Image (cartoon, rainbow, N blue to C red; front, top):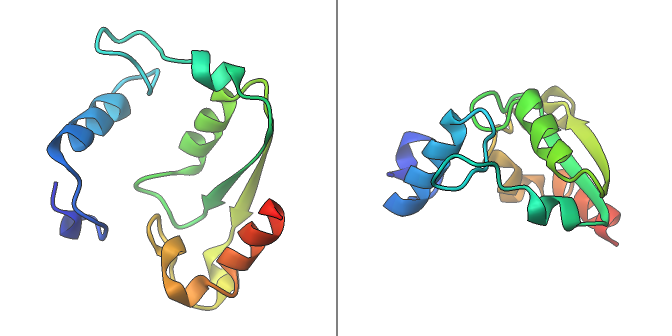
Amino acid sequence: MPGALWGGENLPAGIASQWAFWARHRDYVVDRQGRPIREGFERLQCDMKFLFIDDDKDFAPEKAVRTLRDFYCNANTDIETIQSSSIGNGSIGHFGFFRKKFKDSLWRNVLDWLE
């Protein structure tokens, strides 16, 4: 899939197909027969922080972030909402987080949490 269509990098066809298959399925991450894959998610026990970026409506809207977070039922999870208007550098979107212009704002918060 050409990344220029959605503002990111090119995806290999197999990955794009798998993600599309998952995105159309009500249980999201499933095997080829449509059975939910949860074992690995359920085994993980650690602190996790999920970021919801308020202007990421296409790839990770709030409902999707919360649903993915819920897969990790034995982890200590938290969701942080990032208000794009409070950053002062325009929109962030799904891929914008990794732009160098956010290194002193968005990246710093994540690094502080990891430390």
